Image 1 (tube, helix red, strand yellow):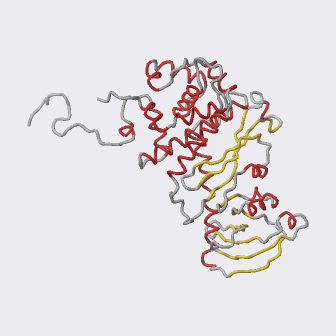
Image 2 (image 1 turned 90 degrees about the vertical axis):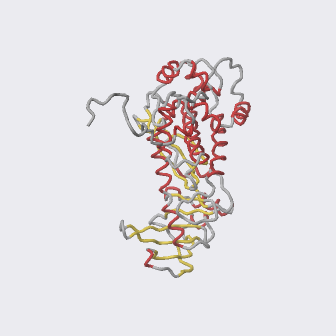
Image 3 (image 1 turned 180 degrees about the vertical axis):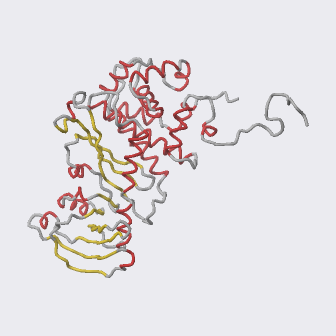
Length: 389
């Protein structure tokens, strides 16, 4: 029988505590705190994400019912609903945002050579946003419509492993294209976006940063063709052109040539037109990169379905951002566990196993193994035979 640590305590081996303490000191998170530290807050919120707790009262009831197991799992502070609510409302959400970035850095290193369907030497990112609806009466600061509130998650994911690298939580009224102003750009990397991000003054910033973008074009684009390269129409390609913008404003916002690629999807009978500032990659690879944009939609779907980000434990802006960043840290932690332990299970399967075994006293490897634990051959029951033939 295993007499070691609880599974939750074993999970914390994948969490760099010294980096967390550094983030706490950076924002003085434990200043004048006596009993319920930022670490206790993080563990309680991570427990809520892993097990799908619905409310602060739900978190309090479950953790209090665990008694000594809670202490051995690492949660040393007194867990109370009001204490956790005050911590979410007052402690700086940037503590957990910075710590999530630490986990993201580790995950990106582990998934650096993960295949996402396109052979590319450079790093490829996808940038998009999703909206989370809120009750306007409870979240008056998140006013969106007349009787509706909402926040928007602007997210950049690395296609190698679908790891979120940049997340910005804003009011839902914030236009998607304005998030490009805060997007960190890496020289030589590719950024894939939908046509909602077409703003040529902002796209020109990619040229200045020596990075590349792939964006779907709008139908009313005013341009003039300068050059045309041959394409293989059996692959779906229809055109590969070098163009310049002719609009009175767009020609000044983006004064250098663009590459325009036309592609016809015969299966869905849809014609796509892409714009990019990369003239080296084959046109078909550019279309495949844009097809990979669907990975961020799958990420948003996974996040909303399997983690607690559609309903919030607190109503303040700080509490919302704290919960979002701890949810992202939980997602990245599960991805790290999957890679470091070389598990063949999906992230969903790992999360579901953790949700029911989190306070079990078993080795972590055994929790994720599906060994056949049938009884030994021979008499399968501890019971005598009634009839012997």
